[in-house]
Length: 245
Image 1 (tube, one colour):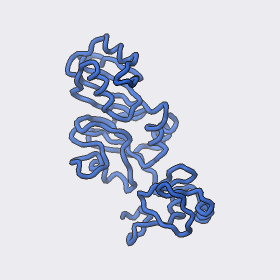
Image 2 (tube, one colour):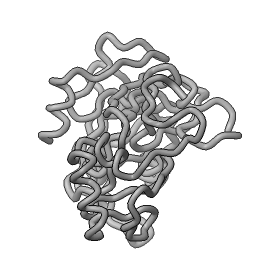
Image 3 (spheres, helix red, strand yellow):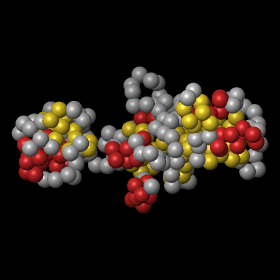
Image 4 (tube, one colour):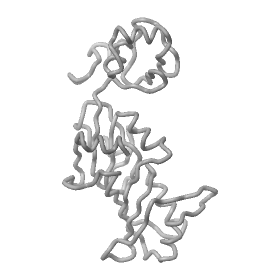
C-alpha cells in the first residue's frame, strides 16, 4: 500500500465509518448515525453493525450512490497501438500499464479503444463522471479521425449523418465529414458512445473497413501537448468543463 492509502498495511481493511468519512460525505460520528439507521449498503446489503470493516474495492453506497475513500483522480492518456483497453490481468499489454505511475488511486478507463486503435482515453475513480459518460441520455461526444480502406461515397456519408437501422437498432452520429485537404478515405466522425466497436459496425454496414482509428478529442479535451504514449492529470478547469457538459 502507498502512504496515500487509507488502509492499514497489516489488514487491507478500513472501518466503514472511516471509509464514508474519507469519501467526504460527513464526519465519522455522523457516519455511525447513518450506518445505524440503514442508509449505507456494502455489496448490495444494508449494514448497521458498528465497527464493520470493508475493502477498497467493496461496493459501498450512501443513499444509493457509490462512494470512494480515495482522492479523486482524472488522467488523460494518448494511447498508442498495441495496448488493450482493459483492467483485467492476463490480456498482454494494457492501457493500465501506461498509467500505472499516474496516481495511487484506483482509476479505470471510461470506454474502450481497440488494441490497434489510437488516441485519447480518460481514466478516473469518480463514479459521477463515469455515469455522465455511460448512463446519461445525452452522453459526452468523442471525435475520431478515421481512415477507410476505400473512398467513402457522398451517398454513404449522408446516410450515416441521417442515421440508419442496423440489426434492429437505430444508429445515430453527432456529425460526420471528409477531412479537409485529405483523400476521401479520411473521415472525421463525432459520436456520443463510449466504445469503438460501434464505429466498425457503422462502416461495415456500408461495406467499408476501418484501417486506422484515432480518438482526437473527448468533449472539450484534446491531444494538444500530449504526445502519443503519454498521460497527464486534468486541470481543475478541464474537470469543471467535463462536469458542466
